[in-house]
Length: 259
Ligand SMILES: Nc1ncnc2c1ncn2[C@@H]1O[C@H](COP(=O)(O)OP(=O)(O)OP(=O)(O)O)[C@@H](O)[C@H]1O
Ligand SMILES: [Mg+2]
Image (cartoon, rainbow, N blue to C red):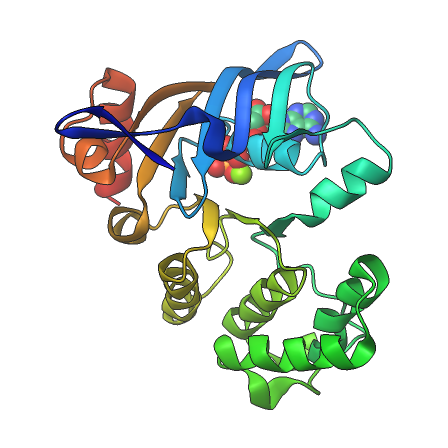
């Protein structure tokens, strides 16, 4: 919900954050990897998470899915605090679709099976409904003709589009992307970014880790910049890319934009 703050400015009502990280801290051994991290992702918003290698981007994504536990703070998904374990965790986890750098498809299953497996087993939907949904999703990512293929028979870009379709088949409330194009040959990057751009245009709530700065500028509603486990800046892409406020962000941009 949009709330009028002052006549000329709109602010988002904090209560509506679909994903909220509040004061999240996470260490591996004595290394603090996330320190007091506050991040909100609102319904329909695309947030791009930027930061140097090792700044904690993947860890942040993995904490949202409880692939990693947190030491303190809170993660709230659609108003519910992410529990440590149990059935409630499984349910909330199913609301969060995740696409990784490596495609993680089941190699011994066809594309169709990859997409229908979890909706049938975890969401409990009928095989015929799952099949219909898989067909629609494959059309959406331009791969309807590959339903019977095995992952090894697909290009990297195609595999990643199947991975996106597979995540969407669970009807998640939010999609996390952790460097979805980093393992791809250059000519395949755009076909994946195009699918993500379409998803964003359709209103999917997305948290995206990417080094594709043109994509970030074009598609992000907001950029969150992490440095050594801390959120150092957050703002619109226009603000962040043209007027970074901190030296750390300026350094980061200088490095990444001269590549
Ligand atoms: N399972 C783990 N055990 C110990 N240390 C870890 C583990 N996972 C990550 N780390 C450390 O946590 C820090 C943050 O790692 P993370 O993978 O979140 O960074 P990143 O921002 O995603 O980096 P990149 O851009 O290279 O993917 C790094 O110093 C990393 O070595
Ligand atoms: Mg990473």
